[in-house]
Amino acid sequence: MVEKAQAAQFQQTRILVVGDVMLDRYWFGDSERISPEAPVPIVQVAKIDERLGGAANVARNVAALGAKTSLLGVVGVDEAGTRVSELLLASGVDSHLEQDTKVPTTVKLRVIARQQQLIRLDFEEAPSAAALEHKLARFESLLGAVDAVILSDYGKGALDQVATMILQAKAKQKIILVDPKGSDFERYRGATVITPNRGELRQVVGKWASEDELTERAQALRRSLDIQALLLTRSEDGMSLYTDAGVSHVRAQAREVFDVSGAGDTVIATLAVALAAAWPLERAMALANRAGGIVVGKLGTATVTSEELQ
Image (cartoon, rainbow, N blue to C red; front, top):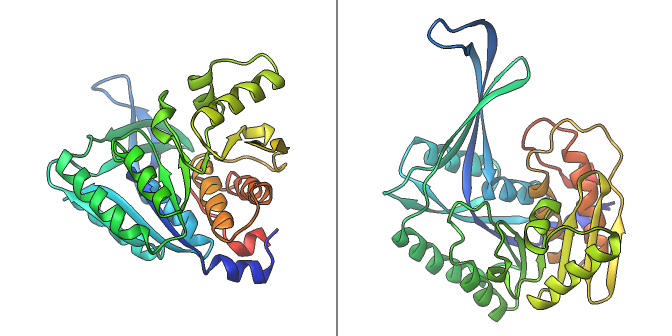
């Protein structure tokens, strides 16, 4: 639970989010007939919705909790990039977007009819080397003004220099949280907290047959990478926190689940704000678990406010 005094404390925190910035587009419509050109449904689009995705959704979640929020990422010089900037401004996020003339803004377009997703179209390319170098220079210049850094890795290339970023943030004694991706966690060495889900952790440490084996593998990974804490998100089974003090668990919040999209973004955003406000790890985990339980009860990528957590 967040009391009013603690909510005010959250407003004093300063968080920098870095990672893969995306625009989520939703085309809603009705489908009553099959195309004569191919055996596919025809969708008469009636409504278009646009939301921040990837690292931009993490930043939106941080801002919703009242923290002073900055976002560093790469977008293309295109209409989608302009839309991302507009949505960030409306969400109260201070954006530092590197414009890459060589690639488009990453867009995920979902076509939905009768509350069912028919297809998702992805528009994406890895950022150019020049854009990444400029972004890294910006990162170093922004570090001094923040309390914590969230590195939101969606595997799209914006965090190719993540190892260097962690070294720079550690040198300035910042709290560093990583939402990891892929099978190479060595690149996250030295982070304060990493927040894999079960699938992501299994990809790195292999399958486990028991809770004891899971604890052994998670702790071995954490120690080998010089990471203070590993927070494992376990969907309906809640969360597990692995530190030098041992392992602690928190149960999932019991509520009806409508959509798990972006739940991990809400969890790491809440965790970062709580840690920046000097909350102990276990208490921050409990709050992040509560926030995740609230957001899955909402449709699409959504946010949780301090008022809801009260």
